[in-house]
Length: 300
Ligand code: Q46
Ligand code: ZN
Image (cartoon, rainbow, N blue to C red; front, side, top):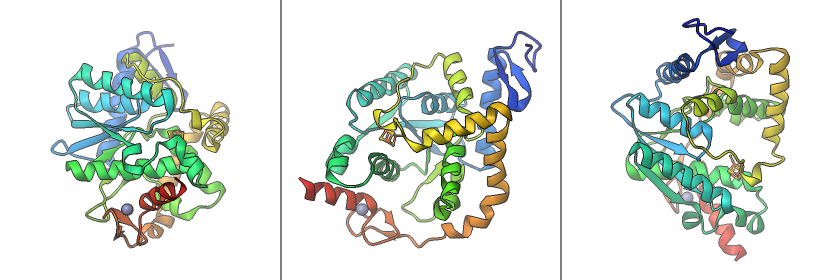
């Protein structure tokens, strides 16, 4: 197997691109794909400070690594979910990564803001753990960015994540999530920062290869709450399709973004208000995070 670029020995075959690359040319390919995502969706400029949400995993640390290499002004944001050893280990990975590169890292504790760590939420509300966790993460990312003056938050969602989310939304024809599914969500309110996903063009296998080749020390274990998650099942189904038809995941997601999403876009036009309690954006009177925090207080 030869590298498409230099003809040297390839270390990785990318069937969906009908190509193979040696290590330096794969790293170059990876960076170009991130660059293409940033340019195509005008995610951020070199003058802007980017808050990069890091979980300690290969995707988010890989993303931060590329942006640092490319000379973007970035700060990491680690949300401590309080999930037993998983959180302790993933926080240590983020802190070590930041220290090694002399990059700033903000750490925010969910327990402090919400009144309970993520594992305690299940006992206090009927909301599934991952749903409460996702809501809290989106809220705290936005809050941290607003408080610290960042115009944009970048997350490490990759092609597999995005295709699996799309698959789940289509299975249930959830029109609002379909309208919001995008590599770049604009700010539609002064208190809502932009959210972007610069890795959406790269598969999980490619982000794992990048992290390995760049010797990034990341947490391999999954969050204990991820076990049995339907999103993992959807990923598995899409991987089976990809095996028999390379490029299936890419075509599914990119075809939707080009041809399907415009049909749903107008559904994303909702009126945003400021939460009566915390001032962050919401479609109602109280935001979901404040409601969740109230439920936790009541349960105690
Ligand atoms: S961290 Fe949170 Fe995930 Fe763990 S509790 Fe679920 S949503 S699985 S990405
Ligand atoms: Zn609120």
